[in-house]
Image 1 (cartoon, rainbow, N blue to C red):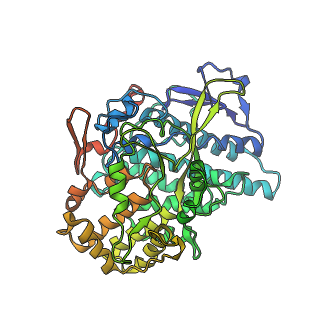
Image 2: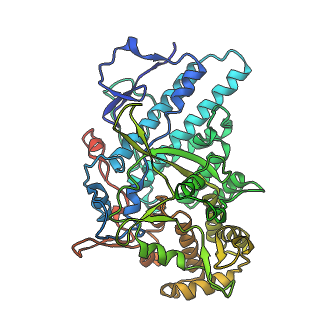
Length: 505
């Protein structure tokens, strides 16, 4: 019997039929029969969420209150660590929860339909195997993204705490109930899908391959997955596989030659750039909420802290996002360029969309650097990787950017930390070097919604409690703190999930 395509998502509190919201009374005769590889593959394209985690950037230390800019209640809730939210705009935990589980529901339907399909020849058999593999990887990825937002840090002491509902079967009834297993169980489900998917995945089914998982991007995901769990040997294993022997990093110095502001965003998320491993298209208001981010003083302070020991001149960092001035102390970042998509050719309404690179080589190499540090206690074996990143991004002011080459030693890094980060001189050498790596990640992924999670990963490490603690002050001068060990590193589940009987945090 061939699958009938109708998705009842209890986790979304909606029904999804061909990706459109409908009532639960859709008649069975109107269901789409997935009786060809092309139809199954079309459903697979919907197994990618179109919402970002921008709200976490407002909860990070990359944000600060400023007077000018537009107000958004959901953003303000994240800024003050208030998770009793009901706001459902494009950039909210509620929208993300719905979109991620919607993607998961499509992945589940793809797997069932593909398993029921009878291949006519060896070529179709291979295509079906690849489709199932990609669907398992997407299912693992979106569950992982939900876990990192709505659960406690991936620490041994937290493994018995609540995970998130792992949806691994199509919903054929509105009577299905979901429960939260432990974090340990959720991680095991993710790992099973990830490992099984990697066996058969090659990513050859699509005309736009950068918008789908292939083997390399899945290995990059594995590198991140194991970094969160602090399984550092696994991080190195999958980082090595993803990077290979001749990896390419983003040519930031070329960015400075782009003739227009819009060209910078195109440069950063170019599907032809081999450093970009996975691109997604999201609906978001990320460039429309300027009340808390980007804050010029934070950005300037961060990117002016560059290695002082390699040249007598002033060292600049071309990773610093360019932007357009929007009032007092507010800059609209141009790392991601909005494209407004109309609902139809003659419509006056539509959606603000962005293309985002969510997995890229720079993250993989930084994962490997961090893993080697945590295993070896030093950066000696990582200096080639560090110098590769810095050579691609740093330049000496007033000179040809291409002429700059980074040849740092670990001693240079320690001198830099003692000079530019004197507040951490009391840390051990290993922890001091860890702060260096985390600050390099902060520069690399500035404006990419990763900072909150990098701090969260070490929020239980007492030696770094001052570094990971986030302090925000609102417009009335009231201080809000997210401290090391705080339970609020886990966002509260959306009310729509709690009302369906899923345990809250």
